Each structure stands twice: as structure tokens, then as C-alpha cells.
Length: 163
Image (cartoon, rainbow, N blue to C red; front, top):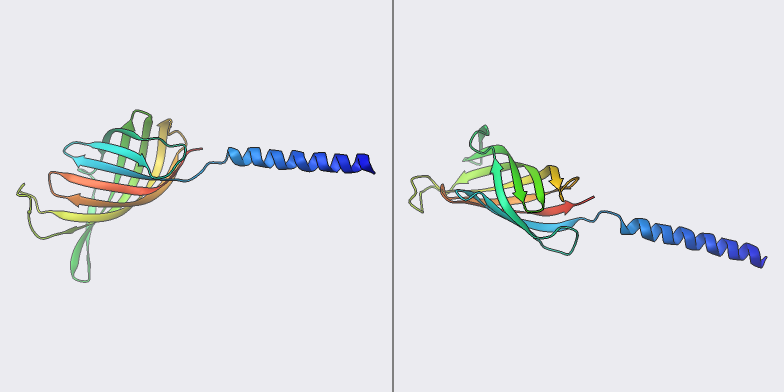
């Protein structure tokens, strides 16, 4: 009987240890913020907002915003410009690409005097691919934009997961 008990205990320990080891390799969602100066600087800084596999990174951002077709809708009497943009962020640790759906509203004037009406936007985004340390990355989140013609600032917040 003692031999059987010892075998059962050993098997239970083996199952427990293998479960803990497997859980240690499980990917974890990590909350991040990405601050961007889209125009004219085309620069970004990725900052982890909690501990995890992703580390701070910075680099350049490119996108199709100049050629992205949009459409206007009217909601509660206000014109809203709806766009889908694709952004590629190239940092020291690799490259990742996000697709964003964004909705712009005008603030009604050119407050900074650059010849373009100022506007604000909110959006949602999702990672579509990655390379380097970002290979296999997944995630999504929300964004806020201040489009002052020149400059154009954005902040992306959400969760990213490395495999």
C-alpha cells in the first residue's frame, strides 16, 4: 500500500510541476502606452504601464494617413470624419503594424494659426503583424488624437501580448 501511495504522490507532484512550468511560459497581456508625434516628426515612444515582456522602445512611425479614404457621417447634427489608417512603428527592438479606426471632429477654428482647422479624434486599434522582438505580437486598445494641422499628436493605450 505504501508503494502505491508513493507512486500516486509522485504522479501528482509531476502533474503539478508540469502545470506550473507550462503556466510560466504562458503569454501575458501587458498594458502599454504609445505616445506619438505623427506630424511632422513621425516619432513614437512605447512605454510599458505594467511589468512584463515588453520593454520601453522608441523610433519612427509611418502610415497611409495622407491617402486613406475617409467618409463623413452626421451624428446629432455634428459632422464626424471616419478613417481607417495603418501605422508601422519601427523601433530599436523591431517593427509592428497596427490598424486603426478613428473618428475626427472639428473644434471650429485654427487655434494655433497654422492655416488648418484644429480637430480631435478617438479611435480603436489592433496589431496586425510584428517583426524582431515583436514577432507574433497581438493586442488592441484605444487612441486619442489632437490634430492641430501641424503638429498632430496621438496616444495609444491598450494591451499587448508577446508569444
